[in-house]
Image 1 (cartoon, helix red, strand yellow):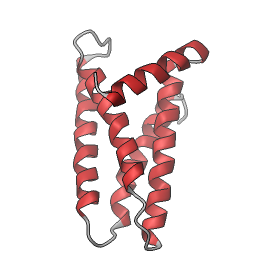
Image 2 (cartoon, helix red, strand yellow):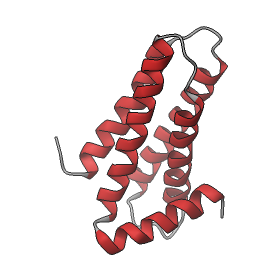
Image 3 (spheres, helix red, strand yellow):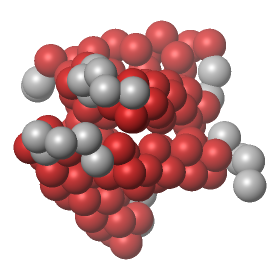
Image 4 (spheres, helix red, strand yellow):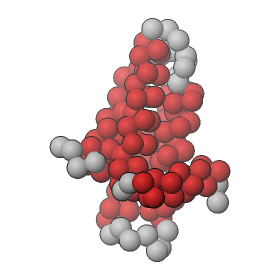
Amino acid sequence: MSQAHEAYAAANRRAVNSSDPRSFEAELLTKAAGRLQRAKDAWQEGYCDEEDALLYNRQIWTVFASSAAEKEHPLPHEIKQNIANLALFIFKRTAEIEAQREPRPQLFDPLISINRDIAAGLAGRP
C-alpha cells in the first residue's frame, strides 16, 4: 500500500468514527480545490507555489482511482470507470502544468472545478 493510500485510510478511519465518509471525501476535495486556487492566484502574481497543491491533489486522486479499481469496491462499474477517467485527466493536466515554463494559470481551472463539483455532490449540495 502506498504512503498516500495509507494516509488516506488512516484519516478515513478517523473520519468514519466522527462523520460520514462521503463528507470526509468532500472535505478532502474542497481542501485540494482551495490549495489549487491559492496556487493559481500566486502563479498569476508571478510566484511559483504550485508544487505542493498539485502533489496533494494528485495523491487524493491516486487514492480515489486505486480504491475504485478494487474488485470489492461496491460502486457500480460505470461510476468506477468515471473515477478512473477523471483521475487520468487530472494526472495529464497536472503534468501539463508542471511542464510549463511560462505561467498559464487557466490550466488550474478544470482541476479546481472538478474538485469543487464532486465535493458538492458528495456533500449533497447542488
